[in-house]
Structures are given as C-alpha cells and as structure tokens.
Image 1: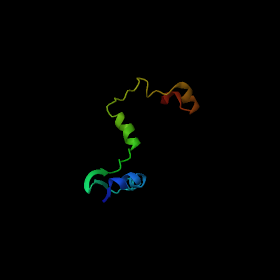
Image 2: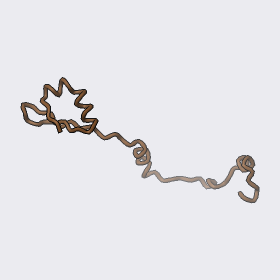
Image 3: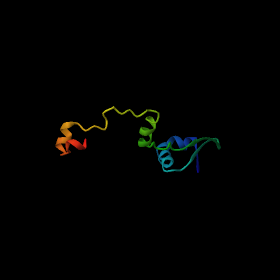
Image 4: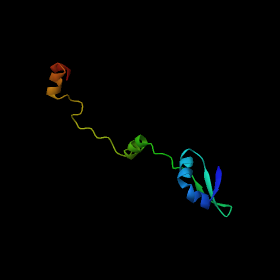
Amino acid sequence: MIMVGMHQAKTQLSELVQRAEGGEEIVITRNGTPVVTLTAIPKANRMAEAFGALKDTPAVFHDDFDEIPEEIAVAFGIPQGDR
C-alpha cells in the first residue's frame, strides 16, 4: 500500500491507475488524512457472464431433434433402417 497526497494524485493519476491495475493499493490523502483508496476493478470473465446470463433459461428441444433429415442421412451414407 502506498499513500499519496491529493496534489500528487492529480499530477500522477495515470501512473497511479496503472499501479493499481498491477495490484497495488493506493491510498490518497488530504492534509495527511487518508480519504480514498484507489484499487482496480477485476476484469470480467466474459465466458462466465455469457453462461450466467442463460442460467435460468430452460433448454427447449423440438420433437424431431433426434431425427436425421433424409438428405443428411444420404450424404453420410446412413442406411434406412438405422434412422
């Protein structure tokens, strides 16, 4: 943890933000008294967000989901009796 005065924080904000992103905790003081902590916001896991957004959505399968269409069966050489 580092402590910096308000004036220093204003003049070196970009550097302080970069250090906070690197994991440091920055405390900004006013007249020697700590008033604000500068910390990085954790990066979002986009995959988790995508799956999380769908967690309450029920899966819907059509009645013919497991049936192979004729043209696909022929293309893959699946015999008539195996469908």
